Image (cartoon, rainbow, N blue to C red; front, side):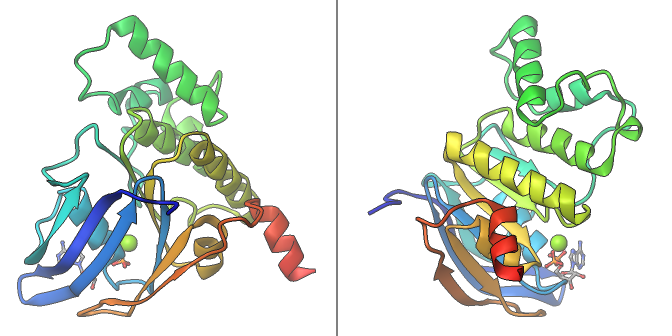
Length: 240
Ligand code: ADP
Ligand code: MG
C-alpha cells in the first residue's frame, strides 16, 4: 500500500452553530503523506470541517484524531493556511513567518532567523523579509502565509482555498511550487478548494462534499498517482 498509516481521521463529524447543522456525519481519512483535495460549493462547510481538524471548533458529534491523538488546538503538529488573510499588518514578512514557530521554545534566536530566511527562500521570497504585508502582492502575501504554515514541518498541512484569490498565472505558478515543496517532503495535506480542476490537478484523492446545510461526503475518488504533476502542463493539454 502506498499510504499505510492514517494520519487524520475525521470520524462521523457533525458540525453545528446553534440549531444550524452545517455538516452531518462527515467521514474523511487522510493517510500519512497523502494529499487530499476537498471540494464543494460555497457554504457547504469546508472551512468549518478544517477548523474542526485544527481543533478550533468542536464537533457536535463525532471525533477528529491526528496520528491517533484527539486534536487539541493548533500546535506544531498542524500547519494551517487560512482562507482569509491572516498576516499581521504591523509585522514584516520575516516576523509573520517567524510567528509560525511560536510553539517552538526549544530553538535559539539565531536558529529561528536561519529557518525563517530558509523558508522565505523556499517560497520564492528571498530578500523580501523586511517588507510589510501592504508592500507585497496578493500572491506574495499567500507565499508568506504558506511559509508560516510550513515552517514547523508539521505532520498535517491544512490549506483553505490557498489560491482562490489569485490571478490565473500566479495561481498556476504557486500550485506548481506547492507540489514541488510537497514532493520534497511528503506530509498529510488537506487542501480545500471550490475548483474541481484544481482538486484533481493537485490531489492524490478528491473528496466531494454536497451543498449545505447538513452537508456530507458524496464522493471520494483517487487520482492517477503516476501522472505528471505540473499544473500548467495539464491545463494546456486539456485546453488546446
Ligand atoms: P465553506 O467554507 O464551504 O464555504 P463554511 O464552512 O465557511 O463554508 O460555512 C458553512 C456554513 O456554516 C455556512 O452556511 C455558514 O454561513 C455557516 N457558518 C460558518 N461559520 C459560522 C459561525 N461562526 N456561526 C454561524 N454560522 C456559521
Ligand atoms: Mg470556506
